[in-house]
Image (cartoon, rainbow, N blue to C red):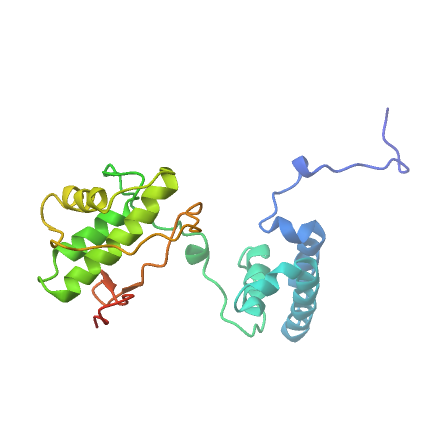
Length: 223
């Protein structure tokens, strides 16, 4: 059928340029393009502020982010292809910073020696092994053993002897940690529930990036 002046031409998203910020829609892009054509800088800036208000209403979840007002202005620059000559309350974002890829997080591919205890147990044992002998180290071993017993019972719904846990500590430490003779763990309450893994172990990161044991249930504190 031959087109005439009354024919309505349909446009599909596949036929137009991909949006830099799809959450704001194509109408906001058109508003930005029209704003860029305004010759007067003051009027362009005024129109930019109005567009930012529209963007805020279209993307209300942006309020959940810190400095959301600056993020809206950053989004405006991104929609405009960073080609925007206006008086903005914030510095214009740099495309090389916005489009930069995050650094890859190195993965620990070392096999876990005991999966039912988790990988962090090995790091804790390394820390304890570096401690000098004494009451503090004994308290650390005891607290670790209580935690390991809890983790053990999550995956094995039976009882476990203290000596089994002590043997696991010495095995996982490859002999670097020796459980003091006569060490006993607290009795398990008959109503105890070990259905959920995880426990507050009381660790904090020091300036050297290593985890430091900062709290114990008994035997004082290590600063």
